Image (cartoon, rainbow, N blue to C red; front, top):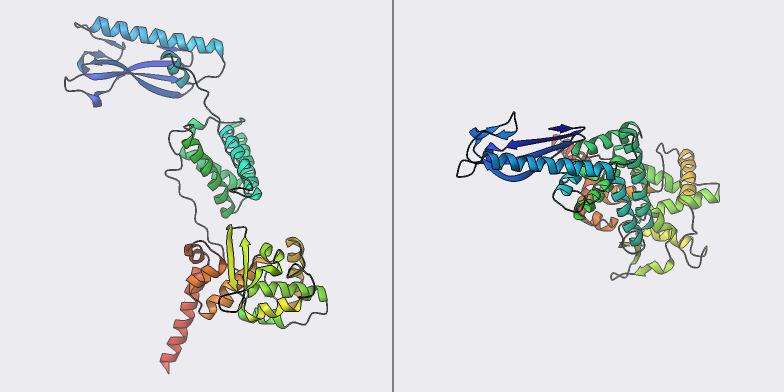
Length: 402
């Protein structure tokens, strides 16, 4: 019962025997290595079925069963030939739909669905998401497109064919061919997963291929300035006024926890008198889309007042992150700090050397950093606390010896 790449078989399902001892006869169609099964609505006792001839053995109802199966076979072949004439590309599902007299719906390609999702995101830019988020999805879409071309030598794959191994192969490609760090891979897979959730919600995909997937957990080492390094940087006398200016902004963030964008866009109107009659910074943090509120420590206030007359609107003159980091590298060499100094280290220094190493509870640190969940703070700085506990226990052990 084979025709070209089409295979049609009738199979009895013994596991589904009914109370009368009869089993359903199902039709199993295979086309282009894809298989689908549907019920014929016919039942037969197992011993009366001849699997080799694909027919019922002789008994009272055998002619009816065999004629019905022959008719199903003919109609399926007819649907197959009709589709063969109409279009070059069709699936085993299309054959069954045509046989049942149902409209054939075009199965969506993975990249096609990814683009649908991207178009939806584009309309949300400035409302629910930021432009940078939309661009990140486009970037991940390009990686997915390149993977499909690399792995399958085709422009797209049908989304209904997605299996768990597609994800693991995509991850392997990003790691070996693109040489991405695990954290970058996790972000790309995370975006892909959200597109798959969208596909399931739109009925483009019936099963979630991510059910068994577990991302590789990565923990980046937190780079920060120690108390000695911070003091060394604060006390260094620069001959260059420009280097001193960039150093001061960096130190300001070490004592306020502001990220580069928040510091660069910090307006004087964002410095307010708090309930405690002290100066507070209140800014909108883009990354979390939340208001960031932190009391200013005296060292941060001193630096801010030093540049009071430089600009009428902003606390510090605006600058670019790349330029800022370039000067920080020069500063690190001059001061003798053997770390790849970037602006982000200031925020890490605030969390560790300034707060955690001065016994500020982690829940307060979490609030001062503007984290939406304390788990985020624990994930990033938990090992810092472990180190602190170790140091305290070592000091206690030394005390107990005397």
